[in-house]
Image (cartoon, rainbow, N blue to C red):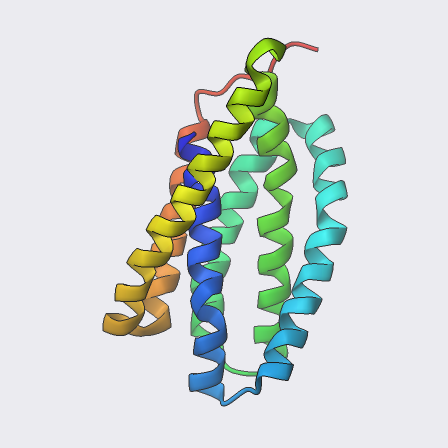
Length: 175
């Protein structure tokens, strides 16, 4: 539940203010911001099945942990980038890293509960995810006003780095 809270909260807290940051810092139009999100989304869609396949071979826990570490660093790097190719690449990589952790985390956590309560578990996990979004987005609002987008990125990175700590003791079920 904590991992679901943190997973959704960190990425949505960051993305909520990214458009405002791009507009105010680089004077990027909404149409170009939308195109940037679309390209990042395409990367995320492509990464998800690859991450699922890789997690079945390398281990779900391993992929969850490392993709979150990479994502945390990308939050900070993107927030410090200047407009151009490297910023666009960084945003694309954010989409890939964020997506790469979802399928393995969901697969791993749903395997840990019995079939008789799986529906209840998924409902509670979804509630935890929504609560994480609301909580971190609210914290990010104050951070954005006080410290700008870099402060938002630091919150997102910290929240994201807590996810591997939640997963350290998770054991993958025997095959």
